[in-house]
Image 1 (cartoon, helix red, strand yellow):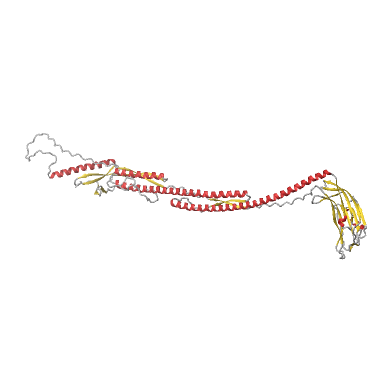
Image 2 (cartoon, helix red, strand yellow):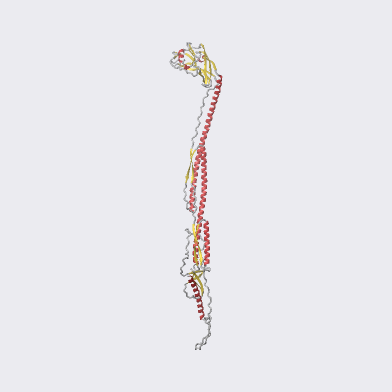
Length: 607
């Protein structure tokens, strides 16, 4: 049965395993050989379990260590294989690693595009040879697989964080837009109500209050923690907005109610003011017209100059026959613009006496004429008249009482109604000139008759008395209206006191934005797979048969008695006898020895 044999040697500084096929048993050499069992796998490929000699590795050989790429435990499957078949050659191993590294680099590029901070560490050199190619390649692939998983994990995490921020920002922006719209509308309505209220006279105090919702700190939050915190903040923000909108709406209603109340009060006030103004204006206009008419008439009176008023006063009609006679009068008067009235400048009185038709108990009937502004005497003493007759008074005593200039007596007549005795006094200049008095109807009183009348019951003692009263007035008609009385104006209403209100605007703190998530960080390194050339031993040439020695003829000595020598070839026997196997074995052993010696010689020359 043919077997495979392996020889271990160094080619330069690398360990090399050389294999040669040997039939039969290898001759013993000074180099330790490595044996390997070869078994068949189910798919027919060969799996080699290699055992190498204890060879000290070169100082520059890199020991393969797992690369730490991320603290997160990879959770994603990598397309990078973790092993190669046992029969993998160095070239195939290098090809497999390069493809795996392309995968890792592709994952790294995807990670960078996703925002992952990717750091590529220095490439590690890994030298493989035909003996360790499978093991070292498996180590490299396993590490690349883990690195690829870590990069994918970082990529997905970065994408998730980015997506979480985008979702948080989108919801946040939507909430802010809606919140600002709602609060802005409420604020606009409140400001509009305030402006209208101020125009109506409502005193509005405006102020602004800051509203700070209970926001969670978003700093450093990512993923679900970020979206949950943002959801909380949005809820708090919406609640604050709703509260602010509600309060501003309430203030709007309150301010609007004040405005309406003020408008009503001002409406009532203006209506009443308009009414009073009209009334007072009408009164003033009427008064002004009267004043104007009076002034017009006065101008006409002034233009007339002196005027005369004449007439007769019949005493019989007033005294019922106890005192008869007629008083004739002529008054001269004119308008005095300085005194704003007529002034009597001349008086002419004449009396026609007549006998009484009746007689009485002895009471002195007395009458006198005076200007309208002079005083009237008083005589109310009781007990001086008894039974209708004067006890203590007579025509002369009575004259003494009233002749005082303050009474302005122009004509005096007193007659005892029993005896008929008469007392007369006349002074047409007494008190002249004097002012006439305008009566309510516009006419002017030029003079008046003052009569002494008996009062009381004659049948009751001490109940009778006499007093002086106006018996008749001398009145001249005038076109001058009476001086109008200034109108009494209605009091104007007082403007209502301004109403007061407060409008509060609310400034809700802005909904915080999510921080841009810190980039995931991941590092990776690649491998430089260095292969070791495999030297195939040269097949030694078959040894040439030794040439037969040339025989130089010499003198033949005298024959010595010996056995007879027969010329024969010095080459080994080539028959298939017992020497054949031995010769072949010796030949192959020699060839193997020559190969090994050549390798050792090359090794020594390099070292």
